[in-house]
Image (cartoon, rainbow, N blue to C red; front, side, top):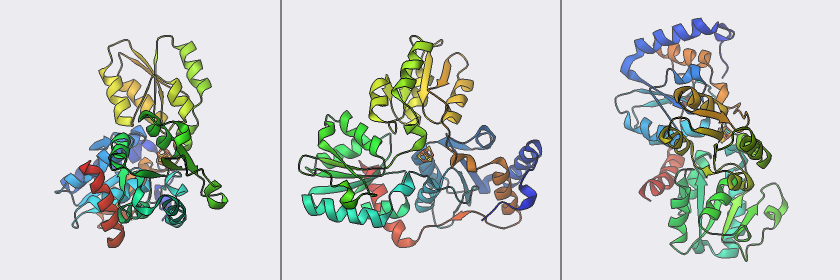
Length: 354
Ligand code: SF4
């Protein structure tokens, strides 16, 4: 679905004013959620901002709101739709904003990998785990096979849950979060094999010595960062703290001082003493906002890296969604079929119980 012509090229100030007016008229019927990587124009209207899981949990807790307007990417809105009550509708202003990394792991390809890996290790010895940044169908696949979802904030705990049961792990779709988590748990890279869905037999990974198989997927925003960027940051900002997201490649995470989820990064900056300098390896909208909101500290991006999919939600999109609601129309309504929801929620609930 496209943005109607009258909303395209709307002057920004007019769009902001009309959004504020529409938002006020809609009152408690609507809750607006904004992911940390959204632009300031969107975040200023967000009732809640957070990472994807925080926002989905928030959505599930807003029982009075009939409409959850989720400013983020598709997998986030899908998760919110699966966790919400039946009287609520989740709307995504961007209408279509699939995360490129989530699209790197289709269920059809996951089934092929599962047959190969579980065939080699024995189905009873392997647990599939998917990052929250994946489709509802892949979450359901993991739910059906005794697996779970994880986030960048709890990946270690979810991996540990599988390992403590004596199981090996098949992890989707982010190679780097998988490897960084395995290393943090004391595994060596020799114990982590990579399944390449684009290669015959997944690139024929060595499954004899591997304990964990990670999918060859990546987030282009985070793989943009290099060790050279870290070295340059240390030259430009002596004494700085380099903090990066675990979707960054292993050498970048190893060269940094700290790594963690968006929420972790924000907490570290907020808790630091005045005068601290942070060089941050994650999406630049969040980094620039952190710098503005922590005026007694210096917060700069490791290098400018931007998520074009997140940027699909503009103020004109949000305005169109809200004004359509005022006219009694739902646009960008995200739904997930009941069977997928059932199994995906099992994988999500396993994560929440860990
Ligand atoms: S930042 Fe990366 S993981 Fe997040 S939505 Fe953009 S491409 Fe996907």
